[in-house]
Image (cartoon, rainbow, N blue to C red; front, top):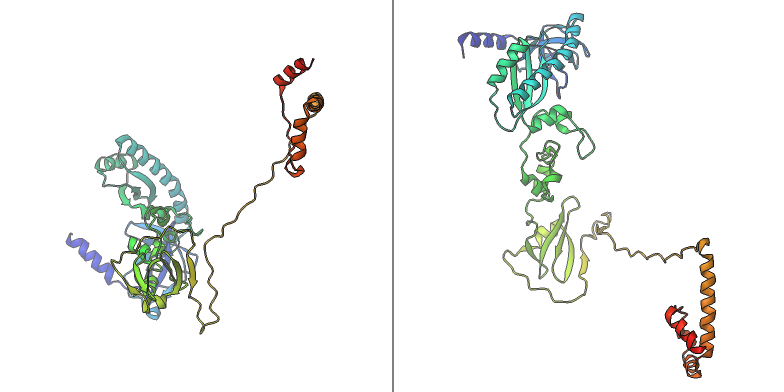
Length: 396
């Protein structure tokens, strides 16, 4: 670092401003503080400020505040001026220039076959510098790209690589909760999220359900991690074996919010409170349960979560869905078509011929019919096409 840069940096830090202004830039998730020499800046005013990138235009989120009153001691960049008509016109014109710069950079990336996904292009207010933001899995050698862009755009070029979470923050979207992503809405920095946070909340370790739009673990796992650590302190692990009231059970479920645990063995299922699990249950690590006897008897369910000293506690509600047997609908008779009317006449003729043949048969067949109870007789229509013709010839 050169000595000239150190001197200028020390001079900037030595300057103190009596007022502070909160300024939000376009597509920014949070406002930034800038120093001002007076309190003329009001909420909603557009101001020109100096940033690390250069001159930029932003919107004041609140009136200028006194540093002495609110004890703001952080170093601040200055507010250059309140934006005029020329600044607003240049800001609007930059939008068209940024679209052209984005197109040029995308063409050069494709021509050089670089493995990078271009996301945005942004000019400073005076168009002396353009910032390209891109996404890439690995580091990219863009030295040749800088030469081509400098020759076509004739300004300073800066390329910045970001990750998946930064992309989600910049692009935005709707999460599984139905609200805008936290990183886009209010988060200023990214917390470290680990799979142990999901384990502490007793969630199923399904990465697809635990991942956000960026493909990483959801940031909301961090919000309740401290509370779950406090509520589950001193409890045995899920799936471990404990001895309770002389019997050995396996912990199959725990509901920390309802303070309820589910113990299960081959004979019965018990619901107890987390307090009883801490005080009365004894860990039995390494215990081998005997095999279950081959019986079809259901397990006995015992609920001990209801306390007599607390009658206002809600009644336990089982989350298991009841088995519902649906009756199959009776088969509907198909309506007979009018086109089959002559066929019905043929059927009636065949039935009459069959009845005549039955009357001409020997009496022993009729005796058998009389011996059978009327309740067991079934009306069955039998079609005998070949035999019927043969019998008719024999009768003749």
